Length: 136
Image 1: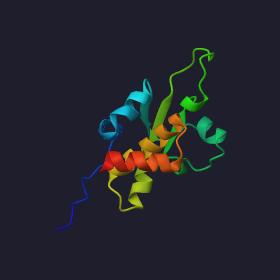
Image 2: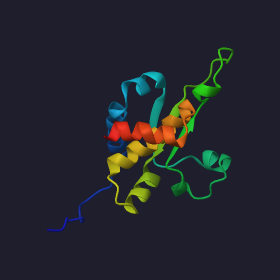
Image 3: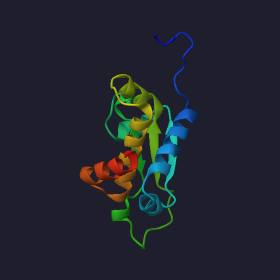
């Protein structure tokens, strides 16, 4: 039996926040502890200013972004600054999801882990190991 898509709607920003929080809870406790006060925000797209700073023309090309100073670059002499944040971009993630066979929750978790990995200065191998542990 095929799904009736007539009345289907795309997951909302709140739905994405719930998926991100679910993914966060599955991360290893030591990973979450190290992340400290990291904030996670969900928006439809990156701002034009962010896209321009990254030299990206198509907002669908950016699924997530870490904004702040990675832990491997922080210093005790740093002045007070804005909190570190991870942005998840709903529309870009939905676009990638539509082109893949991956579950949406897994894709959101993948982007979240990748962006948090930037916070720690992790290599791609490190991030894959965290993702494997979190996703079982």
